[in-house]
Image 1 (cartoon, rainbow, N blue to C red):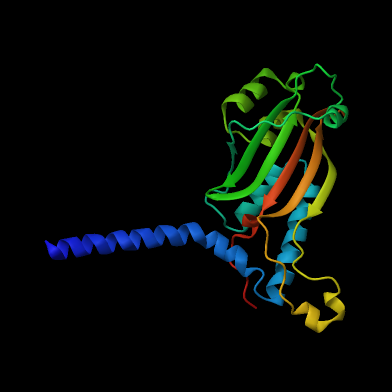
Image 2: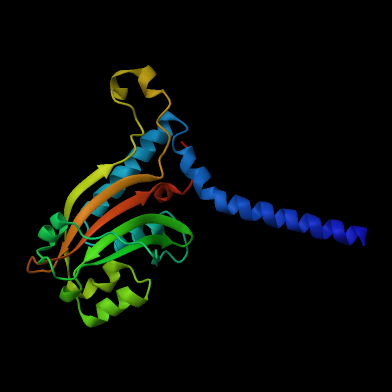
Length: 227
């Protein structure tokens, strides 16, 4: 009985530790990107690459799926939008002007986490005009976790970026002129690394959605390359 109890207890401990390690592995890897000057340079290059790919694409969803695929963040590398219920942000007068909607015209709000496997790559606030979408698209957005970009893909929409911000500076100002500055400790990696604000338009230029996307540190949730 004692041996059986010990074996069961040991198995439970191993399972608990394994689960904890699995849950913390991504955050541990993201912390490693700020461990040295070389890893910070690599992190900056990766963030600039992702930023460029997002800015050159009309669909953040497809860009993140490609990112997830080439960095082996999940298998299969498919983006799922997990809706966050009971969250509301009324559309502002400025946003109504940007969306070209009248004061009484309905504008819906949707907040989601974009996940690839168990990795949360971004969180998005989305204000959209339901009257400019098809009934099928509105049903998908109301009743499923389909990413917005995938739901409205048949519209052949275009994306116009309003702003793009890098929220973490892996290298301090003047690092290229001062060796001591280059080797100084970087600011801790924040929860979000990039922020984009954009308008989605129909091919004729009519806007139908405004989105604010915050890209998390989990976009770097893979091993730091070794020189």
